[in-house]
Image 1 (cartoon, one colour):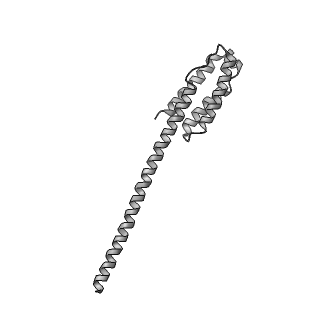
Image 2 (cartoon, helix red, strand yellow):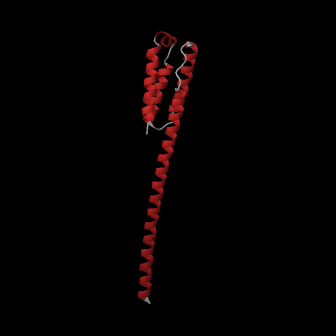
Image 3 (cartoon, helix red, strand yellow):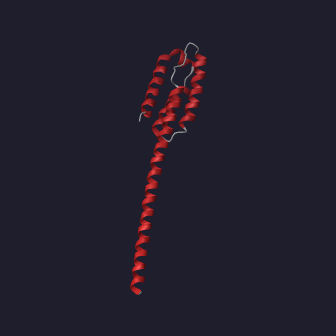
Amino acid sequence: MRISTRWTSVLLGVGVVAAISGCGAVQQAGDTAGSAADTVTGAVAAAEVCSDALALVANPPDLSAPQAALDQAHTTATELTDLAATTSDTDIGRAITDLAATLQTATLDTLTSAPAAWLQTRADQAAALTTACAP
């Protein structure tokens, strides 16, 4: 009877160890799946931020009405700054922030005396944003 009790104890011990090991594998698989889901969620969020930012600067301002163009540039700069705060991707955030700064620092003088240079800077920064947003 003692041998049978010992074997039962050994088999129960092996079963407990196997069950604990199995739980660890299940936990690890769950962690891996959670990490993959976080990565996908982050990529979707970054794509949404990029899409929104690029939509804001898709059309150049109408410089035939400089005050309206300036007001629109400043409004867009504020929207971009708010948008940059929502992304955890530093490259995308920096590209949006740089573009917002160019729009925010625009003046009537800039838009009337040197519009080509300002538009080129804006275009270059929009291109940098497009590059930062590329997968």
